[in-house]
Structure formats: C-alpha cells, structure tokens
Length: 479
Image 1 (cartoon, rainbow, N blue to C red):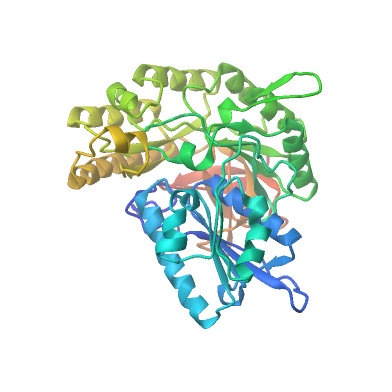
Image 2: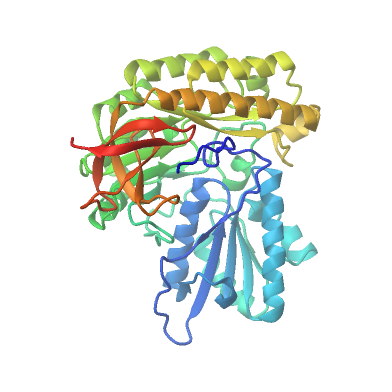
C-alpha cells in the first residue's frame, strides 16, 4: 500500500534524474474576459525560482495577463530557469525547442526566459539560437510588461541588469498552483558567499535584505487567507540583516523569525537555506523557544573534508561544521537536519570522499540532496581548477553517498516509531484516496487514514506505527 521503493523519489535528488520543471498555474482556469491575454510559466531549480514565478505572475496580472494551465492557449510562455547544474540547462533547452514548435503554429505567441540562465546565456538564446523573444534576469521582472510590449512589435527584449536594492517587497505574489495551505516568502535576494562551484552570485547579485515589516505583513495576510505554513526563503537566510531607516534599529534573522512566530501560534514557520558559517546560537534558541518554528534545518555541508571545503571556498572546515551540528542537537534534540553534498569535486581523493561519508554518519541527516560535481562556466572553480575526477568515479562516489543516506534516513525514521507528532494536513495521499498526508515539525511526510471531520489546513496528532525510508505511516490519535 505504501511506497517502499529504494529509489526514494522525494528523498534524494541526483544529477542523473530526469528533472522536470513545475508549471505554475491556477487550480482551475479563471474566467478570462474576451480579448484578454494568457500566460503560462514553468519553473526549474531552487525554491527561490518558484517564489520568483509568483512575483512574475503578480506583475503580469497587473499588466492584464491571466494565468493558464494550457500552454497551447498561452499568448506568453515563460521559463524560469536554473544554471546551478548543466542538466538543468539542457532540460530547459529541450522545453524551449518544444515551445518554439508551438510558436510555429501560433506565430503571435511569445517565449521568454527568466532567472539565472537569462543572465548567463542572454546573447546565445536571443541572437545566436533565436529560441526566445524575451530574456529577463532576476532583478528585472518589473520591466517584463515593457519587454512584452516590445516583443509584440517584433523587437526582442533583454534586461538582465543586477540591482543592489531590488527586493520586490511591495509586490503581493500571485499564489499560483498553491494548495492554499503552504506558501513561500522571499526575505532576501542575492548571495555574498563566493563558493567556487556556484553561479548564484553572478546571476542573482549581492545580498540585500527585505524590509522586515513587509515580510511580517505578507505572512499575516497569508494566515488571514487560510495559509498555515510559510517558508522564509533566501540564498543564505542566516545573513539576513535589515536596518530600520526610522530609528536605525537592526533586525537579524533570529529577530525576524520571532516576529513572524508572534503572528499566530497556528502559523508554522520554516526557512531555507542556512549557511554553516552564519547560523547562530541566537537563531537556535529562538527556534527552541517557539513551538510553531519548525525543528528542521537545511544545513548544506557539500563535502566532509577540510581541504575540499577550502577549495570550494565554503569558509568553514570539517571541525567547524561538526561543532554546529553538535550545537543544534544540544539546543534542540528533536531537530532534523538535512544537507547538500557534491561528489567528485576537483582533485577530490578517495580518502577525502570517505570524509564525506563519515560526516553523514556523524550528522545523521534525515535526508539530503546529492549530486556529482558539474563544472559551471564563469565560476571560480572553472577558472582555477581542473575538473579532473573521472565521471565514472564521480558516479561511483555519488552512489555510495546515496546508499548511505538511504540507510541513515531509514534508521532516522525508525526512531520515530511509537512517537506522536503534530501534523499539518496538506491534502490527500497520492497513493490512496482513503489516506491523508501532512508533515511534522521535522519536515517528514506522514501518511494516515482519513477520519470524519479531517480538513486540509488543520492540525491533528498522528502516532507513527511503521516507516519506509521516505515516509512515516501512522494513525490519528487524540492530543
């Protein structure tokens, strides 16, 4: 009845997966006035891209466009792209080729690329390959209506200028394809961490934090509309820092999550992503203080070896990371930690790879996102280091990481058997109409039978009776 597939879809993500984007669209087609235009948008990559697509949806809505589920009915097709790995770019190219075939049948249709690929490949996409009409970078979405107007006149448009101020704080995102229960809130943009393997600082610019009061107002508005969980997003949320221009008071990340937690005890708060060098004891103590701040931290390690971490320019070593993990468990023994890992980074030896395996055993990650190294043009690693680990070795090491994580995840879940968790109901299980699904504070999916009175968006208590590597399975009990 329940998924016990060793491939662990939803638990591990490897670069070899055929990763499809998510089409952002309304739950049902809205009534569209005659003569109005429709847009269709797909998103790839990180949660920030999905959040950005909701911002784009709002901007287009103000310009008179309506969202549609049917790409063939669209007047404007947009792809919100990711450049973090080569596979993601290849997937997007295939989608652009498909969209251009649609355009052959509907010449007035416009196709645009948004996000990280837009900045990096603007000339190639527009002029050389002529795959798109519009190219818009992450800081230029306000200019999208102007670029669309130009494209309607036959002029290809591009705006990939980066900004030191843009946060889109005044835009109320259009919640596309939402379950009405969980939502993303972008709290900052850009990244100042120059990890040698990463393109984000070049495609999203420098860090800038959003007005704290606008974040609280957005979260409060979501709660009033029935949402019961928000995820605060940033490339490095722990470096959030906003100065109130009125009194020069400073709001750090610990202050911010406390402000959001005060909105209502029934509003859950999650956040992503944390950088090991920046997560503070103040943040951990704030998490421990409030029941509605989820006990889950995504803390990417990337490698368990200090020399490789230095090459990656991660600005911490093995011992520093281990101390942070130890401190998390000291302050919140029930906290779950997840991670990102890269196998086969430049010059990585077999012994250094084993350091990653022992780090996994030490940290006891509940789950991880795992990849083999993919060199990205323009990064420090591409300029300075030779990508000298053979692909077969990268894949072998990745498989060892995946296999170990599967075992650790299963053991992690087994420890939850017999425990009772507070679960936010998010919907019906994909496997059975007779079951509901939700997540606990530790971000673990829990499946349990429906009972009379259960409603999506409410909290119930579920006792865990059995587990798979990816899922907890239980039954509803009284609090």
